[in-house]
Length: 234
Ligand SMILES: NC(=O)c1ccc[n+]([C@@H]2O[C@H](COP(=O)([O-])OP(=O)(O)OC[C@H]3O[C@@H](n4cnc5c(N)ncnc54)[C@H](OP(=O)(O)O)[C@@H]3O)[C@@H](O)[C@H]2O)c1
Image 1: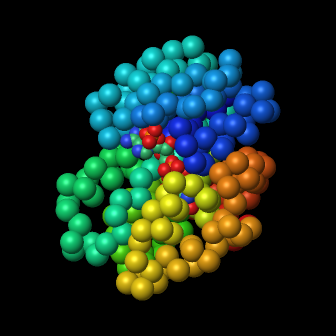
Image 2 (image 1 turned 180 degrees about the vertical axis):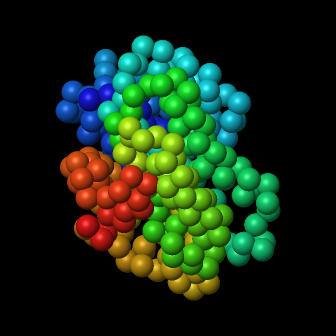
């Protein structure tokens, strides 16, 4: 199995990489820090997705010997600050959109232009794409846009099955900020995250990755290409 994963230096992307390498898959990874694993079947390239001009060249180099991809996981993402949208600097929002949305668009564009066959695309979204909770402004906007990006590209990639996936709560660095730094009195939506941490409701990244990979056939069997799937509803 050939898999491209963005954001595989930590968290869910790293968990997916570990799980896939354990099943003899070949993994191509993109992130700023680089994947900390060392494995013959891992090809890794450092790239800042916010630097949009650098993305096509990074893909040229990374995927130069790749003939087909069974799976592309558009996983890289940042949360931004939990704060009222009207107090959020538009330049910070623009930066967040580059990583959470436009970087993924450029990757899909590159794959289409190079005519690299891709069987399945999984864009890692969030429940925040639909919940629109107070304080989650930039992140919610970016994930809602990502869901719609996937719907739109489903028309343009007829030979590929695409879904955007809310992976449920995963115990990663993103949760460090949400559970430890965000004021839960002002932002009640983070209360349930704090309660879930350390329980089965917030698996670690490797457990979450294993569940996602197990569900892969179900995504293409049970959902139209372009659909948004929330793993908690399966
Ligand atoms: N954790 C959760 O509960 C949860 C819930 C719903 C959705 N998600 C989504 O899951 C995905 C993974 O997040 P995570 O929880 O695993 O957080 P994480 O540990 O912070 O991982 C984020 C990954 O994205 C990469 N990334 C961030 N900015 C980047 C940039 N400018 N260029 C390239 N790569 C970049 C990071 O790599 P570098 O820093 O090395 O660049 C890292 O590998 C995200 O899309 C997130 O929105 C997470």
